[in-house]
Amino acid sequence: MKWQKKSSLRRRETMTGYLMITPLMAGVTVFFIGAFFQNIYYSFTDKSSFGIPRVVGLKNYVELFHDDSFYQALLNTILYVVICVPAVVILAVFLAVLLNSKIKGIGVFRVCIFLPAVTLPAAIGLLWKWLMNYKFGIFNEILGMLGAKPVAWLSDSRIVLFSIAVVFVWANVAYQVIVLLAGLQGIPACYREAAAIDGAGRIQSFFRIILPLLSPSIFFVSVTTVINVFQIFDLIYLMIPQGSSGTEASRSLVTYFFEQSFVKFHKGYGAAISLMLFLLILSVTALQMICQKKMVFYDD
Figure 1 (cartoon, one colour):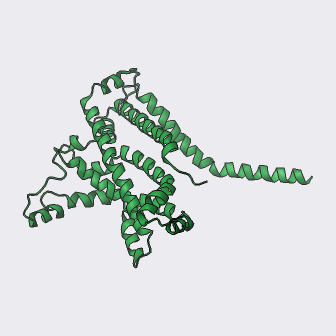
Figure 2 (tube, one colour):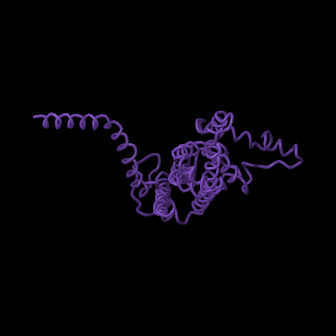
Figure 3 (tube, helix red, strand yellow):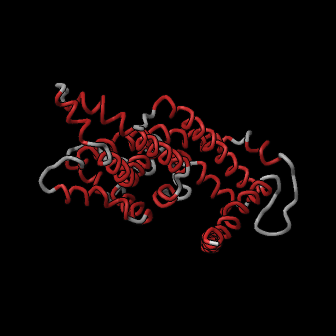
């Protein structure tokens, strides 16, 4: 009798739990899973803004692999990843170690570094757009005071990609610092104390003890940063005027998808671009998961 009451209570708790998550799961099913498979279907059609889409088979993918603009956007996206991911990870580790130290006024430094994490991307993009303005930007104003010529940060095809990368690093490093700081504070002090007793200096202690124990957090930061960089869009859209000389040199796969789908209304072609981006992110993430077995140390 007692067992039956417990079983009945557990069943009611289970049903209540499922009932609570039903709205969320319904939203995920319709707007994520359903939309994902619908996007795959659209990639095999000539869908535009109007009319009934007609199935065209692999036509979009054949055009995609003969599209020079697609390859340029792919190359730009890879360059964003190569530049931004190491910069974010290294800078985040450095700042997290500094913020984990006990110095006077550490709270002020933490607030200053965490500020970009709570700032809207639109505000960040517009702020840096004015800072890098050719005529009125503070960067060129400083260069002028030093006797140097102004730089077209957002229109020179040779440096516009690096300008966007700098803004992305500044905007995204704050959240990763929070993750790494939590990882640092979760490392038991006994490891550092034992290393100090054995005569290890701060540098040896960092590379031999702190860094291996922090590797799970670094791995998480690396994976999330890679995914975020592959999806870079808002900063490019806000900072680079459409049709400017820096558009092609800064275009990512997501901005190219946006142009094809919502500017030129080639939504079937845009769906093919988004699916290729998904496969690219999936492949890189899978490679990271395989490499973690040799690069990540879990303290059991």
